[in-house]
Length: 186
Image (cartoon, rainbow, N blue to C red; front, side):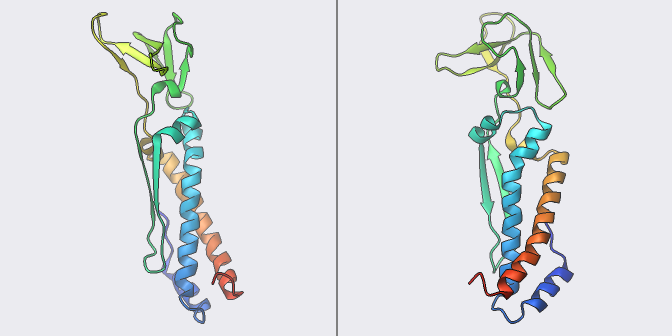
């Protein structure tokens, strides 16, 4: 969570007392820059911890951002979407039809062997890691990894994102004050 201290708000209000809605504009612009930093940095931070393809993140993730406004300085980012197929993580073998035991790693540095799993290409062209329950008469089931929201919720990923966003907001407050005092920004 990104926070702006009461002392910072008072200092900004004092410095921008002569500018109409100056403090609100400076704080909302700084908050929005911090939120943008989180939105763009989330996939990068996730890929530092998880062995997932960036294209898979983009395909399966919906990101909603509510920006801060002068009347309401609260903003948020919401990640949602479906689980990413396990095949989009680190999997060996990569080719369908290879008679080799399938191993997969969702997190970097890890890995699990799947005894009854296999790589297959469906009629639609979709390639994935599949597993059949017991006999050949049962249907197959695709193995899935995590969704983006679950990966962003990881403590180490979240901590790094919050730290970067807080740093950005603190830097941008100073920039926004200078910008408004020099007559820029409407």
